[in-house]
Image 1 (cartoon, rainbow, N blue to C red):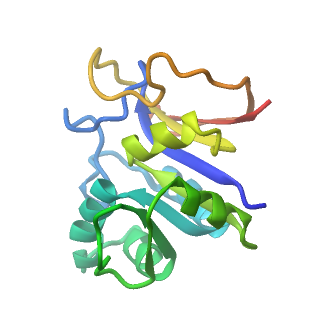
Image 2: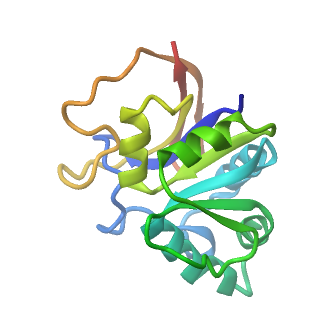
Length: 184
């Protein structure tokens, strides 16, 4: 069975909503993020599928395929990798190598197929549903040295989580920390 890995950019207080402008991607980043990008490239090499909720998928589809000057490699990776979007309403993903899954049963079936890791990023509604359904095998949290006090959080109130064990921690030049947790 394949591992389902949730990768999130997150504040110290658990917020993953980037609307407040605390997180930038790719060429828009102000600080040197070459070490983070190298880490992400290693993660990408270990997966063969990405999973999104509809809203995040549409945001990604509206941005990444149109980045002609992307020096990070993210555009090429996202255009080439197999993408899955969980949506009950979408009929045509309009992005190469993309497949629509209708519900969490589709995610369960995807995990049963042969292959490497499946990575889900952003997609807070989908992530909350997958956490509640016990589908997540690993969390890769890129923790930014920011405290917001408000915004959508990775772990919703009232959700029982299994015990986690820290498998890796790594600090980057920018002060961002990678914390990897697997189910205990």
